[in-house]
Amino acid sequence: MKLPNDNFNLRQKRIFTYDIVIHQRNGFGIMVEFSHAIFYVKDIEKIIEFYEKAFGISAKFIHESGLYAELNTGGTSLAFADESLGKENLPEGYFPIDRMKGHSVCEIVFTVKDVQKAYEDALLAGAISIVPPKHKPWGQEVAYVKDPSGVLIEIASLMAPE
Image (cartoon, rainbow, N blue to C red; front, top):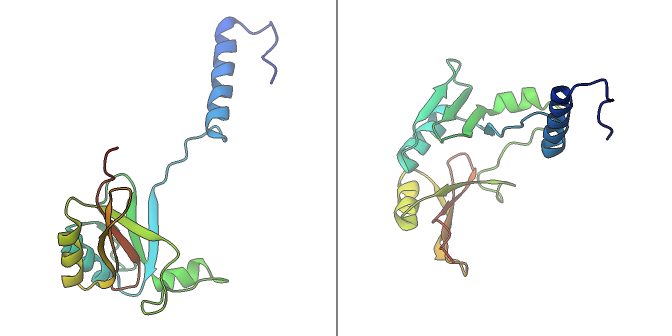
């Protein structure tokens, strides 16, 4: 890319160059932030209660309609929307999660200190066991459950330091 012609002063050249660097670094010249992961479920109230009981994660926001809620999960929100919104938002291709058939195409991962305890707490709160805790060759312990709506959850320890 060509720098501006010599009629630009040095400051203008630096600003122009900086803008190019930003554009090249992130591809679009703007910051893209991963802000939400949303799962469509049948019962928002039930699913929020599950995450509170199973993992101690409280609700950050529940819309007064009861059709949408977010959990306090840090920088990226874990959110749930009613299946009716899935049908409305995606009229030509919404497929609800079937709790009893197969597994969802993505998973939520919670990193915990005690995988066995978190796994047991999730089961007591209503999760369905998929894979009990087991150690992986890379030093991590993981377990898999489904929440009451069928969303796949991995419960994992931190990766072991090398």
